[in-house]
Image (cartoon, rainbow, N blue to C red):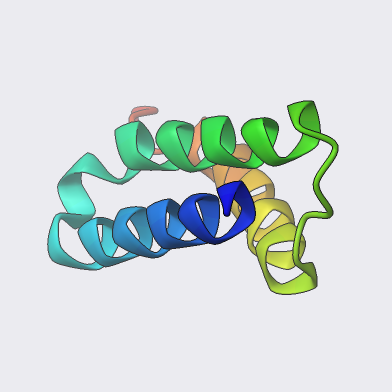
Length: 70
């Protein structure tokens, strides 16, 4: 049951990211926390969630320079 609840929680966070792109960083952190819950419970993290986590990590590297003066 915990597995399905965590997946549902992730789905809700993904919907919020789509609805509120300005709050993306906050929501991404919530997503990472949910993924950490999977791992803490010893549950397998679904492959699509792992790919998403990798993509989010790649996005963060680009964001460092978002507010740099040109």
